[in-house]
Image 1 (cartoon, rainbow, N blue to C red):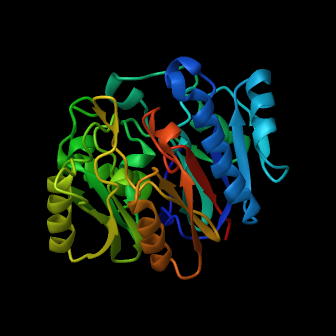
Image 2: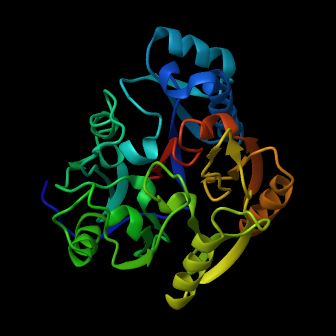
Length: 330
């Protein structure tokens, strides 16, 4: 489509009409954590819906729908769709304001650099957008929604590890990517962080590292324990954020979270900001309560709610990754 007029990507804390959430449907992807992941995603959907916000939980087939129906309250709407991974933050439509009217942007998706690609991943974003009658733009470059985080005023956080990774857009320079962020999403100031968390399958998505909580203010973890696997990542991110003139709001790190010999990319920053609550992941560690309290203090008009997420994490993502909001119309 032809781009016309002023364009803006709203911040997540701005009013939302509803949120789409993906419900796990493939046991091969989740292994022993499959049932637990379903229960945790249902708990997330219930918490948002019971706060008074619309929730559309995507289910894959009749059996998957029946399982979801047994776990969610009547406040959650089930929506049958063909989708692959549940990570709608990365495959769903990115809804912008264009001349104060909603429009959708769905750049290319290549399975996080060719690592994972399931049937429906490349089509679900367009289907959700066109199903709501939104004009749809399909820019000719690769971008996942979890790779960016904005303050709604044109500033965006991202990581070099992801957006400059040759497995995404090898022909594009840093300057060309910045130009596309401005052209396609109205993002005029890019704050480049370095690496994301250790073992993050997404090549360092920023929504698992640093999140805007207000214009000019970014939530970022402080290391927990001498064995925190991301201590250097946090230190580098803090230095870059402060150099960009942003205020860092410290939140705890969950510290070292392991599954066997695998170090999980666990993060409290993978929270979802709804209209009246903030859904904060918890991992069954002592830092959980302090993290929920710290995030609650950053959102005085909302209540932070801690929700178990270890099962979801086994699939490689979190609550923010599994959701995509529909900004309210002006």
